[in-house]
Image (cartoon, rainbow, N blue to C red; front, side):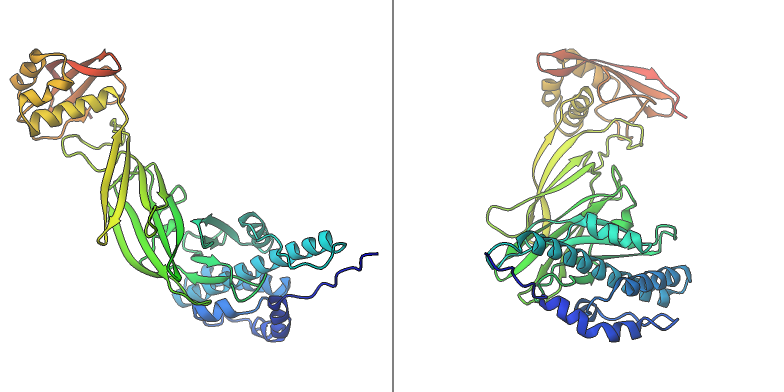
Length: 398
């Protein structure tokens, strides 16, 4: 008969048990303790569910107080509760793992790592809401927001979290989001962005990008590094706001290591020749940026072909080049004469599309000055479109 394997508590569980008395004493006060620094939070052992509930309650009370000092302390307590929820999931997974392997010969095996769903569910049981983005790449890093689900928009804390290599199955290391790191909460519940990590020598790198969808407020992108060391934290080394309107953001691992390629899908930069109203048609660009010399540089761009994109290219060629340079986008020289005849090559006022105009309309109207307008007609030419007619018009846009 194969002997049953004895379950030996891991180092994190032993540490938690040894510090339980201290933790319970620390949570018995009716006040809010000053927030510990990040390293102390990371090293704090995790208590039982009653302590988790107490931390959560005190965090909600601190946020609701309207006092900035209590709000800071509330954030630290919420991060403690998150650590406890993570460690509790880890313990549960370890128990399941032990049960399923107890009839086998003793081996060194590791239980599954906690997932965002399980940790969030643990926090929900004590009245806290969690939103987690898991970084692609290695090492593992989560960008986490823990909030009072019925509190104000300020009742939250945002931080990075990752497994502590010093404890198997213990609480994670948490680091309050550095001031120069892009915060998802800054860009609202519909924020678009991405988080990725990579190994960098004996340390690690992290790239984070967040912004509002289709917003001209720009896309905030940061690079952070973490030196070698079990308790090392992240330091932001670069932060830039790219003047882009993004619908989708992604990172692609660099073949040679180092910062990844940033991929942005959306309207891209503002076009000074066209009014950028919310209902106006926009280009659909796929842009690739590389990080060189502390700057993100555009390395490649692809524009999805539409009748609107053809007219944009036609107008840019007409104003920035010579009339002949606009010919590839026109049905013939007559169209160039029409455009120059109404001064479209000289106008400097941004064109504003008529209400309801879409990027795929074959007839498009734009206001040029006051009620003066231009009407543009495009037609198919094989696998693309060309400008077939340009004429002056009248248009009133409220």
